Amino acid sequence: MKIEDIEPFFATLAAANPQPASELEYTSVFELLAAVLLSAQATDVGVNKATRRLFPVANTPQKLLALGVEGVSEYIRTIGLYRNKAKHLLATCRILVDQHGGRVPRSRAALEALPGVGRKTANVVLNVAFGEPTMAVDTHIFRVSNRTGLAPGRNPLDVELRLEERVPEPYRVEAHHWLILHGRYVCVARTPRCSACAVSRWCDYFRLGATPRA
Image (tube, rainbow, N blue to C red; front, side, top):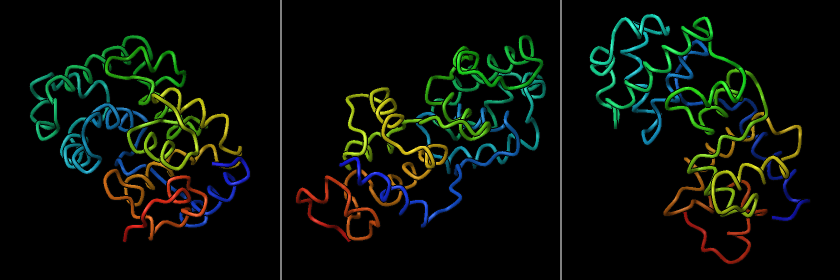
């Protein structure tokens, strides 16, 4: 994608969705962290279904620790890898209580030190909870960035660094939301909906001869 095309690309996404938001349901920074941790290799819909049962009962590190692995597992067993995720979540809760006064830290290093929290999860929390212009590169952003030519890269870190270089400053805080939603509902993996795409005119995939799909 040409540099001069990036601003109108994001301006169009922004006009269509001025206030993009995560589709995970949460009411606190800790609930967000827990939901993102549980969302690895799972859909937001599936995570929300589980946390609607879990959070009314236990939505703080202390309350989750009181439930224990078996108790937490009962609430999240509909999520893939639920037992390992329960262990990671409780290990994270223990560190939050012992080292951070039960609060979610705001630094990347402290977040990535939590069990089950990698760079992508840390980026989501930093962006959604604290408003930092981070790029949480999941499978959707990786696909959209490469397919459109916006920020090609061989791996998620490559794409993240290219996005940080290429996304104009006014769009950086919301950029990862727009790209995730675009990849989830329009620029889908197998049959991208090019004929319904508002930004196809700036997309390398479309401009270089892809067949539009309804």
